[in-house]
Image (cartoon, rainbow, N blue to C red; front, side, top):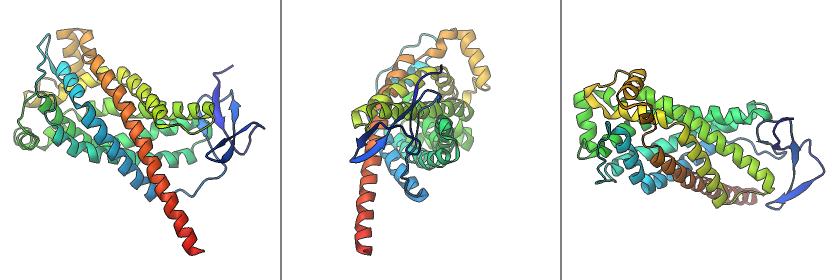
Length: 325
């Protein structure tokens, strides 16, 4: 017998029911499904533009809050990963590059969630209900690709600032382009995708599936602390899994014009040969801590912002309906 998973299906439901937000919903436990899934009988027409705009607003808000709160931990993680051998870590200037980074984090987070939300909704309608996890994985990867066009230059400048190579973000951009060309802003792009595409896909899939399963078990909508706790777990687990990819990405991004590494595989071979396999886990503790706390804040703020926007839309729609009557 396969693992017990939870499903809500208003069309084929068991006699058991519960109330949520004043509405009766039916719950069905299905031991044959390997991923949590959810469907409701009453579905509003899909509004792509509204979902896109709400995702942009909620994602941008969540991204800025997380980056501001956790930037010092990210700086320590970057300096640990960039250090060769047993180099001493400088703890001064832990907020170096924050202002410039926020200028990139805001649009990158907005683009990611703005693409992820409507893509997820579309895929959930296209895929069979039992494959909801595939929809979440795919939407996460697509959102990651869209956001990478902004994320990578932002990450390059941020990490060069964190390792104290430049005095200010504008100087960093100007000097990187003058010495390395426009391509310098996309240093480590392939390694970034190698890390971030699986990270985004896995993190959002774990979060969405745990949230749906918890929702079914609790038989109610989740509150902000519960969303935050699920986000923390999803972030920490995904961060731990992808730490070696993050080390490789960091080394390629901070090498500058020295061209110490010729690519991803050369970077891996050099690290293992010169520093040993454990070097691929450098910054493991700060990364897991940073992403775990970041996941808690990000998803907590994200769900809160989405709920606020949804309530405003509902109020606006009701007012419009009354006027039309």
